[in-house]
Image 1 (spheres, protein in one colour):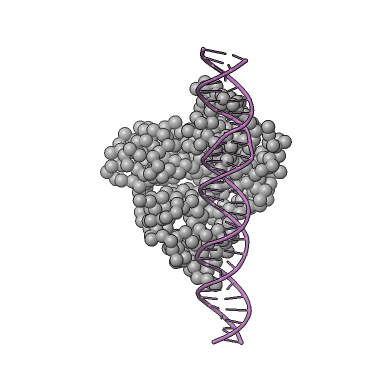
Image 2: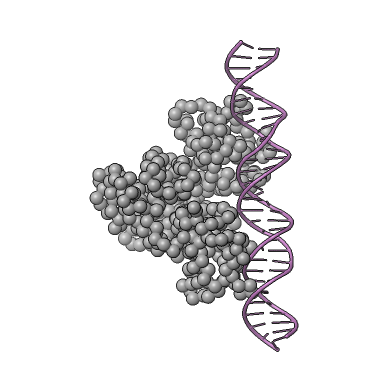
Length: 217
Length: 217
DNA sequence: TAAGGCTTGTGAATTCATTCACAAGTTAAG
DNA sequence: CTTAACTTGTGAATGAATTCACAAGCCTTA
């Protein structure tokens, strides 16, 4: 039984950590799918994901009950359910803002396309880069960012500009109507509550390692 | 008063989320330092970091009491304390394994050097890349990885190889004595408990955004 | 049909993290 | 010296996430 009327009307807020694990489970399931396995238990899923079987079952239970007692989960069915839950059944349109090295690395990253994320264009303010291509992705003048957002309605903006320009770009794209941002700038970003912002902060990860190496034994 | 005898003998395990916030506080403090401000309150620090003043004070309280009641914290002193806590007072030696686009982006990333992370070398298995330079960083044959780890004793290995090779490289570098890894591969990695592993998983972040965009209203 | 072996789904218990709320300490002003 | 205005540091309270533990259901074998 399911306490929710539908996936789009979640009663409880789902924790970020839960969503991240669902994403990991999906990756393992795809692996199992490729190897032709048809069912999997929460225990096996847990071992792969470095968590516990109770955690796996609890995570899934927020969205329904997808398994069979005594048997486990059907690999293709659970994979399908997770794709649905994570919203991967459709195309997501992406703009990259910042055509530096990180932008270039992302433009060629196969994981984007594989999961339905289509990169429409990249933006930069340097005349060296404008008009060129980044692995098949056109680099456009950042002057036209707002205009293009209105025309092409990207769902997600990936930010790879230097830290001191990141907040300014956030303000611009939010004003133009973007509601999801993935930033690689090492700064804290501020946006309205209805805009989803994720930040990948390398400096923070490195300092986490530095801390771990320093404070142990 | 401090319930710990020294920073290297923490009684309580410090949560990952706490360390990440400390890292953020340090960034703001450096900003304040550059602007010549001499004191700051937990409230101001909180506003910048998108948290609460109680959280800031609690985070700091795990390590000692660094503020003055009625006044706040001395900016340079607190910055210094945080650098010490995070282990940023020394040089950290880094190998990059994988000289693809992401490896290249990291090789030129200024944030590394700025915080005392020195990139000693990069490794790859492609003869196109071996012997070349990645923004001043020599690309070496991955065949020599173990030998070089023993010789040059890097503290941290940054992994930017394709997902299907990541675990193999982890096993190799762990066996060779490395105790901290920062991975950009979109896979779950397994390592002994005394090895600190952080993973930056772009696919997971994107799926988090996809989930957020799908499940709202 | 019955028994044995497995595995799910989920309330309850526990552990962990955040927020509250206030005594204690500091500064500045009169 | 006294008062007023602040701000820290921290136990206690609350809230959130994880783990426990077991009834309920499914499959296989005989």
